[in-house]
Length: 394
Image (cartoon, rainbow, N blue to C red; front, side, top):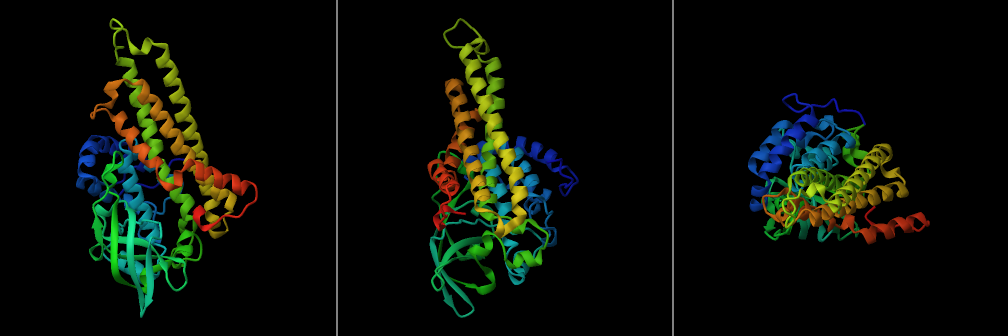
């Protein structure tokens, strides 16, 4: 892919910034879990570096990074903390999504010169009723990742007139937040629920979901020659899978270092590194992490090739990206589980990073995009020439 030429606001290469930031995220991870939100310092550092502007088009005040460049930064961040990498990447991706809205909406989003930060729960679990000048929006949405750090909320509601989903943007102050995100992993994403009770959203602050998905959005005219044309769900699937890549790589590094120093119990002081089963489990983990990294790299390249086709991107290509993202998460979960099973009880101590990587990836695995059976059924169906439906999330 080549090293990015883009730089942070203070002139650092993004890879260098992400590697250094990952170390700080790892130090803050226990506190972020306790807070069930990212530390204020983390948010300030990301904003000061310009991270939330990394993916957005240059004409919207962003850096216009390719998805390949963006994904590499997210992977590096996630070696420190997958939960933190997830929140930061989603907020940056959602700022990119807001760039698809009409000019009048973007004037509101960007009027303070900062990237707008917003959760964007994608399931259309609310309604949008046509009223004079806009839509009356009501409903409840899960899961609003990053709501603790946002000024805006982007929800997907069913337009009662057209029966099609429509994205609606509103201020956080206009919604209610249900504190429901009490989880074993990914706790610091703070992915609480959002409730909207009859908020009237102006026309220009809404966008049909089919335009958000790919092709023909007002933002593509405002920001030509940008990545706004890329298929949203394929890109989202790969962005959300990337923290699992970082977690698996970090887990492998910790496990390898731990096995070099750990003494085997009830063995008279024998080193764990001398035990053949340790070699076996480490070899398995190496194979799985290397495999997931190759699948991820291949998918990253495929997204760059297929993305510019926008709404014309082939269904098989988009499904292949969905399958690759699900496979990455599946392999990451398997690799970390293999390591955890061989690392001994001490690896479950709260100060041991391995247990956090395991819990985080187990929760990532629960995302609808990574339902392995559902994704494989979709891939097999498309391979045999069957048509996809709305529930297939293409």
